Image (cartoon, rainbow, N blue to C red; front, side, top):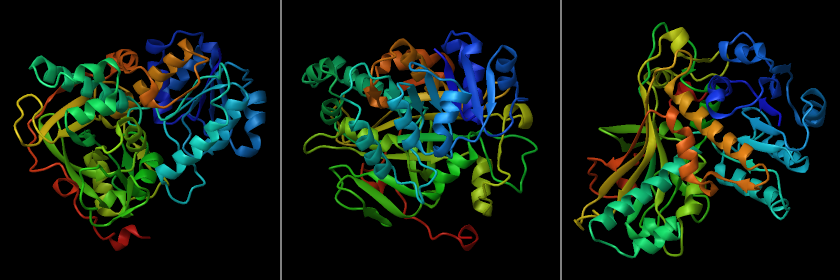
Length: 452
C-alpha cells in the first residue's frame, strides 16, 4: 500500500515525525505532495532520505486525476491522507471514492466557501456519500479525525462509560447496564442527566523571540483564522429555554452567531482551572449531536477554546492577516507549556449522590510541550490522524466512518502513548446551572481594526 500525504503543513510534518510509532511500512511507499518546498524540515528530510518521494505540485480540481494517477502513481487500495487547507474537499473525496483510494481527512472544509458553516458542509458531504455507501467492500474513508474533531469523540464515549460506571458502582440507575451493553450513548447521556457538553481546551504554550508584527499560532495559522472568523456554531439542547443573545437558529438543532467566533466567549473548565475561551465552530458539534440526540432529548454542545497567549495578543492588536503568518515551535522559539483538551460533561444533578445541583466531569488529554520539534497541540492532532490511519490500514475495505463510528477503545489505545496524561474524573466546577446563560457571554462588537 502506498501512503500519500497531500499537504505538508505543521500537522503533516508531525505525522511524519511520529509515523514509525504508529505504522510500519517501507518509507519508499510514502509520497508527499506539497506546493511549496519544505524538504529541509527535519521531519520531512528524514523521510526523503529514507526513500520517500516528494512531489512539488499545487493540487486543483483541474489536475486531480493527473496528480494522483500520474505524479503520485496511486492505485486502488492506496491511502490518501488529506491535510490540505485550500482544496475542494468534495471533489477530492469523490475522486478517491470513484478510484477506490482509502481517504482520511481532519475536516470537511472547502476553500471556495465564502464562509465556514459546518452543518451546510456536512449536509453536502452526506449527500455525496449516500451515492457510495451501498457499495460492497468500499475502500475505507474516515472524515474529521484529528484531535477535535476526531479523538474528542472517543473521549466523549469513554467519559460517558466512566460516568455510568461510577453510578453503577454506587448502586444507582441499574437501567444503565442495558444502555452500556448496547453501547447506546444517547441513552447513557440521558440517564446520567447530561445537559451540556463542552469540548474544552486551554493552550498555555509560550515561547521566546516570537515576532510581534505577524499572526502566530501553535498549530496552523490559516486553519485557525478560518475558524475564528467564521460564525460561532453550537447545538441547542432540549433543556434550553432561550437562545443566547447574538445567535439565530440555522436549523432545528444548530444556532449560529451573528458575530465572528473570536468575539464570542464562554466560561468552561479543564482539570484544575476554569477557562474563558472563544466559542469556535468545530465539526465535533455536528457529529456528536448525531451520536447523543434522541427523541425528546439532546444536550447542548459547543467548543470553548482558550487560545495561547501569543495568538490572543494578535487578536487583541488586530494582527489577523494570513500573509507572513508563522507557526511557533519548540525548535525555533523554545515553546513551553501545555495543552489540555477534552470533554466537559455538565450534568443536571450528581448522578452518584442524587444531589440536586450541577455536576461536572472531564475526560481528555493533558500534554506538556516535550518534543524538540512540535508543540503539544500539533502532536495531539497528529496522534488523531495516525491512529485513524492505522485503523484504515488494518481495515482497508470497511466503508465510510465519522469519528463516532470508530471503536473508541482501539483508537484511544493506539493514540495514548502520545497524549500525555489521560484524565477521566469528576472536576471541581460548580456553575449555578447548565443553560446557555451560565456559560456563553454575548458577542462583542467587532473592533474597527478587525473589520478591514
